[in-house]
Length: 442
Image (cartoon, rainbow, N blue to C red; front, side, top):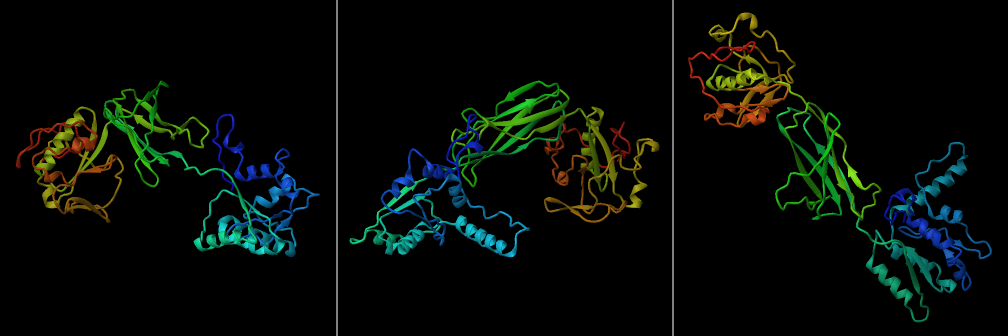
């Protein structure tokens, strides 16, 4: 009975709310109510603690020496996890260890029916006048047979035993909102539109609506609040599950201003939620908006038509200053001498201008790109068709060669705005390689 039933507020924070045990102790020690004293005026009072069964150690109260609040705290507030002092002798350690084992036994489970039957059996020879049960009513172990026996024993004609209950607290479905994730890209370009997604759990709030807003702080310190990107008439609702979950997206349209953009999701607290602040806040997500060229490393097993088509599109992005392109052709030695270069030899790429994020032989298997462990062997060639890899952004285009129409939407996957252009036929020399270091002509 250590849970708290009150709703915290700014005036009464959660740490100042009374637990159910504290409320029981207030009832038993109140000078106005005089609960124990009134019982003792007519009959002796014996105290029992119970969990899965009653505590064998009971207390017969002395009307001349009433228990203080400290006595009740010591008896009711159990702490089975306390440490045993090292400076105690072995006998004291053994007693304390036995006490902690009993407390651990009492706090882990509750069996109200068995405990009541045990008290009736123990007090049957003492002319039992009644039983007062103080509990929240939750029993983790329940036996219908034992419950019926308690009813039968309490309702005997010759020795009826009235049972009174003092209910502590109320049954309340736990309500809790938690922002589990705020997803945003690490980097974006000023002319791009990028999404920000918020993941929210709502315990006890299945099929209920929730309000979510996104606080945006621009690099110049200016703040604004964005509503979610929803269709007309659409709302954000917790889908049933364990726990109920909701997802909402926000569109950041062409941020333009370069620098760090900061995002914080805000969700108002539910009025039934045991939560002090007025709203839930997510962690800060930072997106670095920078006008920086995308670095592309293109792998190919030969100067095929698909390779030249993709190279043409990437060269256009290089000319516009939106990409940096490097190309690595894996050709057999006898094929390298046949390549017609249309750039000066001093501009040929001798090594990669940036780190490659993986090492391995690549080939296309089915409809998925497969990377096998092992070094990249120059001159070994790829095992099947075209294989283009973007380094830095770490995106692959292993299926590009299977789209003969040239309408593959890979501009969106690259993060670039590309237009399909004319493709060169086999045997023709590609002329559009004006400023790309190390770009083969065929």
